[in-house]
Image 1 (cartoon, helix red, strand yellow):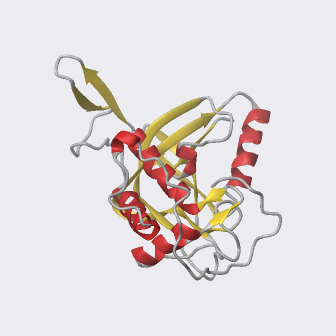
Image 2 (spheres, one colour):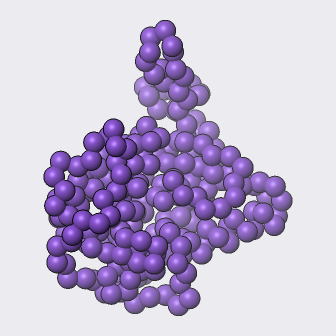
Amino acid sequence: MVFWVFGYGSLVWNPGFEFDEKVIGFVKDYRRVFDLACIDHRGTPEHPARTCTLEQEEGAVCWGAAYCVRGGPEKEKAAMAYLERRECEYDQKTLVDFFKVSCAFSSLSAFLTFSIVVDNSKEGEPEQPLLTGVIVFTSTPDRISNKYYLGPAPLEDMARQIATAFGPCGNNRDYLFLLEKAMFDIGHEDDYVIELANEVRKVLGVVGGVPKEKKLSAPSDVPLKSFSPLKLTPLPEAIAMDS
């Protein structure tokens, strides 16, 4: 058995398991949203963090990293067991197509030239996937059937929650800032992540964001404003791993 898994949150910068290949690319018709509660990594049952999940949206594109695990049943079983424990708040495994755009650098022009790895019918977007059947951890967007689904909220409310939540793996704002940096590092910034991160900086009293020259380092020790926490009931035997 060989499997590929797509990471769009902390897996982009911190996979945490042994893999054989990593490819930067994207999935279609999904967008990244911060609608999932985390109560054992970056938050608590009394004050849940907001972490990202995927929301279906026709025409959307979500960039991230696909990881390949091969090398025998034991290695693959260990990697999947780790992922299932780490992503315990996601209630679905979805199979998606994964696309890649190759990048070549021309020293003569000193510009990046992008070329599609396969023929395409729409400019800037591959027609055929590089991989099919790639696993991605997602969540059911229903508050009744999925106790960890928070749903959307006004940007300011989400920013206050993210600015103040923390758990065994660290605080919620660092998760957001590290994701912002990770997307910058792979060359595919997410406007929604940037907007939310800047709103969190306003809550923290950081004016103007962080210059890219500083690679979007996360301000962890800024005084917090007061915030009334949400409450969720924890799942039994949750483990402290980043999500």
